[in-house]
Amino acid sequence: MGSYPRVRIEGGGRAVVSQAGGVLLVETVRKAGVDTAISAALTPWRKARAVHDPGKILLDVALAVALGGDCLADVAMLRAEPAVFGPVVSDPTVSRLIDTLAASGEKALRAIGAARAEVRQHVWRLADRKAPDAGGTVTVDLDGVLVIAHSDKEDAAPTWKRTYGHHPLMGFVDHGPGGTGEPVAALLRPGNAGSNTATDHITAAQLALAQLPKKYRRGRRTLIRTDSAGGTHDFVTWLAQRGRWLSYSVGMVITEAIHQHVLKVPASAWTAAVEVDGEIRDGAWVAELTGDVLDGWPEGMRLIVRKERPHPGAQLRLTDADGMRLTCFATNTSGRPIAELELRHRLRARAEDRIRAARATGLRNLPLHRTAQNRIWLEIVQIALDLLAWIPMLALTGKSRLWEPRRLRLRLFTAAGQLVTTGRRRILRLARHWPRTGHITAALDRLTQLPDRG
Image (cartoon, rainbow, N blue to C red):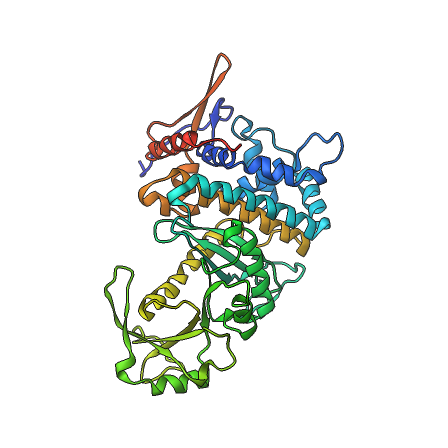
């Protein structure tokens, strides 16, 4: 008999819509005004008497990536459903646009970036208390991503993990414990790009700040977090530069000087580390280092170190002390307990979740050959990730706000539907038995209630 029912398969079904849950992406595009903003930004690349809008073409590819595609040809998923996604151009037309934008270099990248920043400010206003700046501050995490190349692509090179590919540096706005995050920077680099390259961190930070509303592009209300790759003199000096005044929390390498200072910290100076719920973190303590270890660093910088019992089986390093694993970070935030600052820095680990989501959304590999083309691809990936972050922020509630791209696709986007035409109206009926149909319809209702972009 077997474990599964046997069904007869026939082609030619009509009025059936696959990926019907993708209407959530379409409605998010409409409410956020992404389509009009991208179309306006790419007007200079629209030829006279052209039938197809470059903005619609680029956004179609981004929607395909959001639905799980990982190459330009996956836009065929949308082409098969014109009732939901409208007319979609052919593959050669998509390729020609990518080549045209790639040939324009920085001009095209700046145009797309400016449109995304404009839309982001509008979306945050729509989100109100669910926006990442609802508390009056914004946190941006910078982190590198290794992208494996399976062919000889331009600028692919051996990486520090003995793989082969590229090493983009990305930035993400942290949505906090009640949400996910959205991309604000993607700097494409060769696979052998150094981790501690200050100029790359400065460029990525500039890209990230340009994506934020103007009031967060300078000042203490914006926190830049990095791992130890950002702990360089030049980058920290840039963050603290007069007139910029950004807050920072950057990891630091345990140098011999820092190690020696840690050994001199008296037992009474160590404070118990804490968890998110305020409970004491078992086997972990924090202390602040002072004195000549801060010489040569910007004024106001604080150096905080944590010692912690290593997990069973973990290998100690030469810079660890007395059987304790040591980590260190620098910050210019004053007036807060060091345990609270250490917890804030430790929460930078959420950037790893954002990287995982990016890999699941078009960043598993770079599908194009030339670097200029793949820079456009990174913009497409960021648009897709924006939409996947804005759906939970604008339309989902409870635990569903934490759903990452793979779960959104499995539970919402893959829902099937039936297209019904009555008079002049077209109605998309979702499968009644689908367990998440209620989530989809409730989310669409919330999006409908939001004001249209003026």
